[in-house]
Length: 343
Length: 248
Image (cartoon, each protein chain N blue to C red):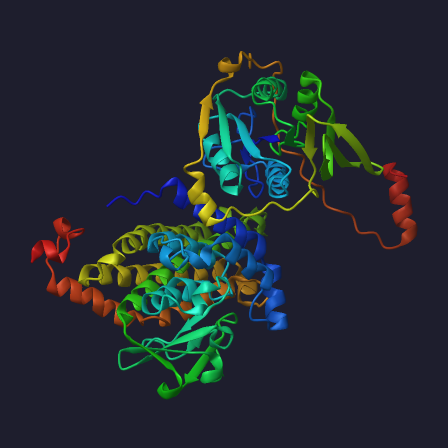
């Protein structure tokens, strides 16, 4: 499996990195937390103009027809800035699903519109109040409703930027869209959670490294002490080990089989474990102030914890890996083999 | 009208440069490189002129190593129509760059050449002015506003005392200051289109330019570490300290 990104993909990632670095700074986070605003309109506008919301939509509905790997690169950068807007859930999961069910739906014709999704694996729906449409689940069937056709109750999240809602709704008032592959939505979401995990982890390490180079103790920067260096090196190693797993899962997701699903689950587990490990290490390196609201590391730990429990718990994902291990041949020669090859 | 926009691949503005241990230059190993920010402003201005219908074609040019292709691809993704890479692994001084640009300008006959006022790696601030001298074209440097009207271009310049407005007959040379515009992000569809836009590979020899350095770098060193401040108990002591330091 070739994990090398092409020039185009590197430019996608660089564009996302630059855009988010300019528009999602610590000042932006604090302002948004103080005002309680759901979105930064200027940032969302820039995201829309850059085409990120169209990335996974088919060309037939005005999208770019790109792949999950391309979107994962954007999701990683979104993780690096703990992006408050629901770009990943809307453009990465809900919009492609709606496009497969109702390609002519008006919510797809406006690139700035967001689509929320209620999935059986999640108790609550992200940003449901501001969505142009909400995809709903009942007995394996998909339904579509607008926020005014459902009852929304705000629920608290550990992450100050995740706006969660319990959605109570009546199928008679929603539009039935028919059967849909909810597992594909889960796989995409879990994959993009993993990609965000890489970004969260890297930001936590970068913040810690920057602080460790600056903070002096006993006349030297604390980063020169082995106890600090080892913590951060372990966190970086976890990131480097998780990255190829995420890329492999992104490259393989389209196969929609036991192997591909195990890869996605593996990616979600290791990337979010890396994110939590890096955030906890970063808090340790920042010392007592690492626990304070003034240091932004808490945002990354909270996002990592929130994503870990969303789109399948760790136990659920471990069970999918177990299914792969116990039903398919294992061993070094089977790492990249498909089950069809062993049928 | 055609617009020529030279762009330079430099160390990214977010990266803190580190001097090599032997003091011979800045360490560029594994350092993120990107388009010189002033050149990004130049590309953006050219695109805006094209969007207004003033320009018909934007040609991006870079002089540097093969990796400078990435910088040119960024310019193409922003909206330039085609690109020319004058490839060399040697360090090229502003005069040699200006000579290469003159040769390209002679070939391409652009109505405007829009350059960044300086590159953030060497801060020379010379190429635009040298190009104007070599080509004998009028120059409007440090532009914070550019308005094309028929055969002339009006440039509002940022000078020490405030703003100066000059009117130049085209063809002309303009160098951009920070406040001229805010460059756009390359959109994903444009990044995809950029791959199919033409990029010509040339060498300095193709333009008959000798790029041998005229300057010798003796030593590169970090700026001195800022000294800690002194706390004074009252204004009188502050005044005495200032006098003692010879500041006032």
